[in-house]
Image (cartoon, rainbow over all chains, first blue to last red; front, side, top):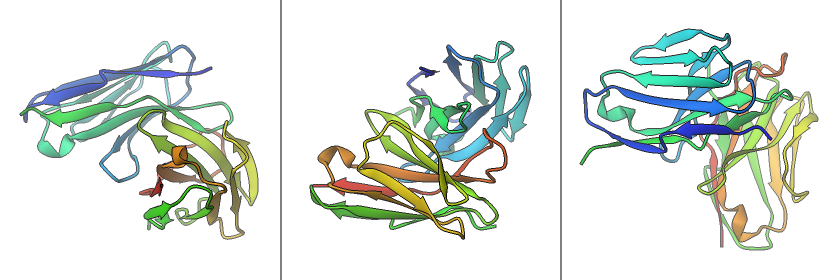
Length: 110
Length: 114
């Protein structure tokens, strides 16, 4: 079945660093979504992508819909402490329900 | 506009009991989807309701059920609870007019089964 492979699984950031993560699938998606989840809360939608090749920004966040429609990328520029959390990519199945990657956990470097 | 609300936020139950969780979607949204989140399996789709009808269903046993009311509020029920049902249960709402619409999540209900 459809699976979303998200990498890296975890990463440590230092304030001011840029961060990149990606999501790949063996199947084509017509929409890519990026969510962030803080501990004990539900995922919050960050960016939605609807067209292959689309590049969309939301503040310091930029996401791209891969041309093959099988991947997507999320970049965070000049990271700040409140960026820590778990970032999920998601794509809708034909029936409409979302499938999610396993998440990329962002932590602050000790 | 108020977001998706879920009650209760936390629940502790024992094996064999049943539990009912509630979700109120964003005003004007008619589709409500439920997801289970566990550390091992991640986020998994349970079911979706639209206009009081189940429109889509994930791969969960029949102990998991749901319903939707005429005001689009939804409940999910888990009967005969098992330890493995401990999870964060999330609901998400969307307008429901088109499949593959963007979904907005509530804060979740944390269920612990002892």
